[in-house]
Length: 242
Image (cartoon, rainbow, N blue to C red):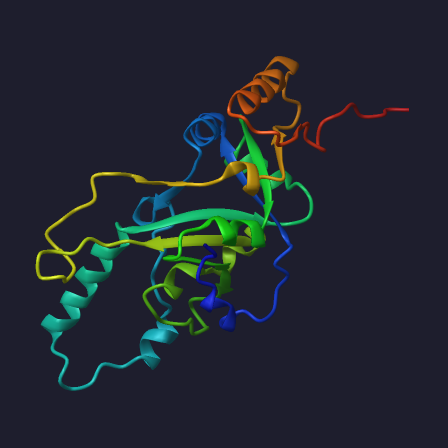
């Protein structure tokens, strides 16, 4: 079932056939192939402490009424932090070509997988949200406010990442059907099942990967029943000196 794409109203038109890449270490790739699933990390486990936050300009615009007490505001803050541990994110890079910085940052000893925005959308569960990330100057610009939209806004310093995100918020409920604020998440993320044969367009080995590593990746891919092409990185090859 296709992911909920309501966020696109904030973003304008974009091509659903755009290529997106996920760069990952080799162990994550092997878990993906063997498990037939895509890993979503907890939002509160990311290095960027600004994940899920709003800008100063937004805080000045979004004012609470006089009936909202400081205790209520503190409860809202605790609720946001609690939900953050139940927010799961899969990060992708939007581009038609490989990106050397992405290799360096996320997959020095790994691989990249390539698909399209449309294919990923079709594979995600119905409670997922999928959209390109918006980049804003948090010191000067307002950002959209909302439970889901918070996780599709990053500071402008990260703009070169050209990120596309899939987000799933799945907070547990108590017997009364309300959010169970007493329950903490013991896991670092969630593996969501995927039909990898339909999702993956290609698997790209890291730049200058040795032949035995490429052969191993091909063998693992075949053993999982995948016919997805395994190719060498475009960044590989030998320089011409004269």
